[in-house]
Length: 437
Image (tube, rainbow, N blue to C red; front, side):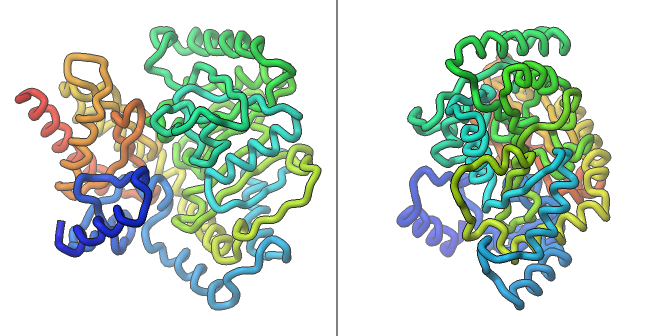
């Protein structure tokens, strides 16, 4: 760390919260990026396999997005939702049409946390209940209500909540009491657990909120069709389904544009939340809901910054680029190649328990060699070693023992192969250090 970087780190510690986590023992200051690469303040170049937490969806410094931002900022930067906004209406029209939800309405926020908060408000108001079903190991944001439905203890700093939350099995396929079952039996067991859980609710739960692929939880996912089977039970009880697509949306999983489409057997969700990638770094989140649910609030509301003209212009340009260049298809093709490369390089490394995921949403779970015990120490070591070799990845899962890999969706085959080799080297180094210890 240079003197300037060390000084900035000291200043950060002096004025920002101690719980505002930073990656790396020597935290990075990223100064600029292009395509799938970023540079730090010391001039080091990195292949970016985390995209600012799955947010740089298309590419760093994408000309179409930066141009749209500059042109809109040159006209007017801010108006609020109390005025008509052409960019907001145009983006809402496109998202409503893409959502798969009939008679859809869209409300824009500034983050995924705020989007999930709004969805919980809508669902509980519509149903007249503060009871919410959530998945074990889940994460839905850092607001007071979102923490109240977060099943991952690493990200839940308080048990206090305005909601009564009941946690259901199913989000983690490879661990827990049902892990040894085949997919059909696994789904049946989770549905039986849901049915049993509903007997514990007094007066009916408002909604189930679920990530089709758990993001912070380490890119874990149930078998396809689980939430369709849940939906059959939920519909019988009048309970809404909220699909948290903050990380899975816009085609990142490759196979589908939305994560819920892997569970579409009983129709779309009642509410869908989105954020992160749609803005390619600009602050955009939102909720899509059928009109009956969206319009159920008995009071007025506005959003000062949700639907900002500048962020909406960025979202429109970014979505247009994504669709015109078939980045979901690229995520499927290049992501499939990357997963296979990572599985191949992990074979024979007993520090790697599992390589999982789909598209460009890949998790590598690490364990203490010779055990099934998650190893956050190994993950931290691989994270640091990969950085030294010029590769940035994230981490999550149980105790932070899973490497999270989610590059911009324009990733090329050559970059995927380069990143896989850099990560393989870091994994081999971790294995050797563990063996030496």
